[in-house]
Image 1 (tube, helix red, strand yellow):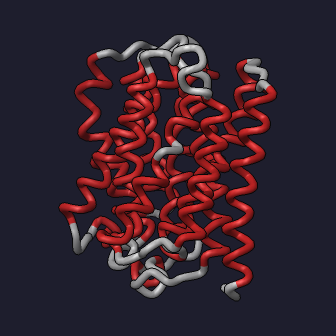
Image 2 (tube, rainbow, N blue to C red; image 1 turned 90 degrees about the vertical axis):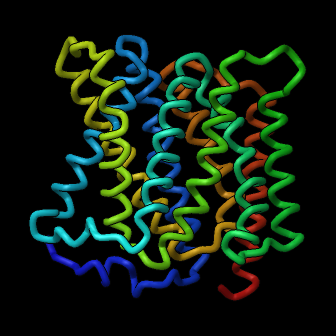
Length: 301
C-alpha cells in the first residue's frame, strides 16, 4: 500500500472547492450510510441496539487502523484542534445511537425522510459558522427537496410512530457533525479525522456496549457486525472528502438522494413496498438535487 504523509492526506491543508467531485463523493457516502442503517436494522432483531452501535465503532477502528497502517504513521493521531475533534466524534456517536434506535421501529425510508430536515440546519448555520452563505437558488432547491420529503412522510395523515423523536435527535447531531467536518478539513487530515472519531466513539460507548453484550449465534452475524464498521468507516471517509472539496450549502440538497438508497434497501431486504406517494416524493427530491448540479455546471465549476 502506498504511503502518504498527513500533509498529503489533507490535500494541501486547506479545503479546496470542486463541487461536482464533492457531490459524487457525497452520493457514494450516503450509499454507505444506507447500508449501515439497513444492516443495523437487520441485526436489531437479535442483538441489543447499544451493542450494535458499539461494535459499529470497534470494527470501524480495527479496519481503519489496518487500512492506514497506523504503526507506520502514528502522526495521524496528532490534531491541531482536539476539542473540535472530540465534539465531532461525540456527534457521530449521537447520530449512530439514535438512528439505530429509530430504524428498529421505523421503516428505513421514514427515518431517512426525517433526517432530511438537516439541510435546513446545515445551510442556515454554514454562513455564520463557516462563512459559506447559500444563495436564493440553493434555498429554493432545499425547500423543493424537503417538499418531496413531506410527500413521502405525509405528516398528520395517519399519525407517526413515537420513535420519530429518535430520528429528530439524530438529525440535529448530523447537522452539527456535517458543519464540524467541513470546518476541520481546513487543518486536519482525512485519515486522522476518521481514526480519531472512531477511537473516541468506541471508548465512550464501551461501558454501555459491554453491559448489554449478547454473544452472536452464528458466523453470519459476526460478518454483519464487521460490515457495520466497513460501511460506517467507508461512508464517513467519503463524507469527509466530500466536505473537503465542496462547500456545505452546495452539498446539503444532495443529502436528499439517500432516500433512493433507503427505498431500494427497504424493498429488497425488508419487503417494504414503496407507495405511489413515496415514489412521487423521491422524484421531487431527485429533481431538486439535479437542479443544483445543473447550476454548478452552468457556473463553470
